[in-house]
Structure formats: structure tokens, C-alpha cells
Amino acid sequence: MEALMAGLSADRPSEVVLAALVARQFYLEGVSKVDIADRLGISRFRVARLLESARETGLVRIEIGLPGGILDAGLSAELCSVFGLRQAFVFNFPDDAVALRQRLGEAAAQVLMDLIKPGDILGLTWSRTLSGLAAALTQLPPCPIVQMTGAVPPPDGRDLLEVVRSVARIGGGPAHVFYAPMLLDDARAAAAIRRQGDIAEAFALVPKVTIAVVAIGAWAPGLSTIYDAITPAERESLAALGVDAEIAGVFIGADGTPLTTPLDNRMIVTPGSLLAKIPFVLAVAYDPEKSDAVRAAIRGGLVHGLVTHTTLARALLSHAAANHGDAGA
Image (tube, rainbow, N blue to C red; front, top):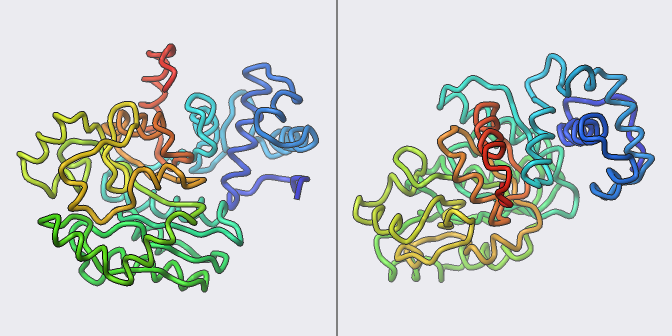
């Protein structure tokens, strides 16, 4: 529906962030309504209604923000503008790691409920935030849910398998799941597992996935479950190859390019070439120490939307301000 309903609802974070992005470009950057409409692919009428709603609801005051809310619409819109993201959602949560991981998972659920539409095929990867996402989902269209990776550590019955199934139960769509770890001890075992029917069926559907939820890990202790799961020699070997981060088990360099590594044939993950073809990838990331990894994922075009918290968002923007000539920032 082209016309925006009067008012902005916190239940529609994408509309709040879109209104903030439009307001930022119009009021702070001096972009005309016509040019904003062209940039964002929406009508001039919708731009006008977004600006009107932003004023009516108090979204636009001296600065752009969501009054009294946890979602920082101003920072969200700034991330979109600076990094070229299609969607960004910055939440003002305390920086306690365990609580933050849970709350960002819950926030990602709210974002996902807003963004996913009938006809989509949802891909889910393993991350510690996914349990929070599954617990907070209350409704989804009945779309297929595809498991895109194994789990780290190996599934224990409460891991990714059950997360995907629980998400599918909420929407009522089919769940394409399998029981496997993300990382095997040797390539022969990994090849045998990939040939299993349920795994082969799930991976055959990955090219049809339209929206995926992933996590971003930095190549450092405590910032990537894969990093923590392998030997020191393997960590050093991958670092020497230029691994800067991993996203859903895909190793990437500082420029975001997927890298070939000795671990690849031991991994049960969606290959980087297929991950890059998914129309919309929503990443959940926390901890300012992951800012380089997040920039790499965005720079490589592997991430189109980001759910994060204030501290990491400000770290990303500070780096961009200090390196404003960097095309990837």
C-alpha cells in the first residue's frame, strides 16, 4: 500500500527507520523530495507522508530520534546513509554481552516480523542470538524455513534444529532441517554428511531463499564461535590467508571477499557464492570489537540489513568519519 497510515508504530521498525532516513536526507542533508524518492525507490507522495508523520509523531525535532523508544531511529538512518544498507536497526541496550545477545535476538525477531512477506523463503543460520529470535517471534506468514548451516558446537537437541522447527511452527510453513555440526574433524566425514537426504534437500533450496538471518564473527578470541572451536594452528593458518571475519561459516577478508581455506571441505555451511546471491541478508552483530568484521561483510555485499546496538553503531560511524575517503565505509 503506497500511502503511509497516519502515525508511526514501534511495531513497524522498518517504517520508523525509513521515516528517519527520509527526514535525515531532507532536513539535514538538504536533499529534495524528488531526489529522495528516486534514491529510495518510493513515490514523492510517500516521501511527503513520511515527513508529515515524522513531524506529527515527534520523530523530527531538533534531532532525528525515536522519542522514549529503544530503537534509535537517527543512528539507524545514519548507518543506512553512510554504509549504503537497505535497512539498519540500532537498539539502545546495555552492553552486558549475555543480555545483549539475548535482547538483540529478540529485536531481530521484531524486525523479521516486520520485513518478511508472504511468498518469501526464510533461511536461518547458526548463531547464539537465534534462540532469542525464536523465543520472541509471535507471527510469521506461512513461508518455508530453510536451515543453511550446521551448528557449533554439535547439536544437543536444543540448538539450530529446534530453533528452525520452532520458527516454522509459528508461521505454519514447512521446515527443511537437518541434524549436523557446522565443523567436522575431516573432509571425508563432512562429504558423507552432505550426501544425507535431509541435508541435500535443505541445501538444494538455498538458491530459492529470499531473506536470511545471519551473525557476523570477528577473527579473534571470543568473537567467533568457529575461531574458538578450532586449534591455535588452524586459527593462525586462516589469519595468514587474510581471514578477517566469518559470516554464517563463510570466511571473508577485509574487503568482504569470501576466501578459500583448508577448513572449507570440513564445513557444513552455505558456500559464499550462494550466500552472496540471497536478495536480502539480515545480520545481527554486537560488540564494538566486531566493527572491522561488520564493515568487511557490508563492503563485500554479503549483508543488506543490520540489527545492532548503540555502541557498535557508533564505532562503525566513528571509523567512517575518520576514513571518509574509504569507498567501503
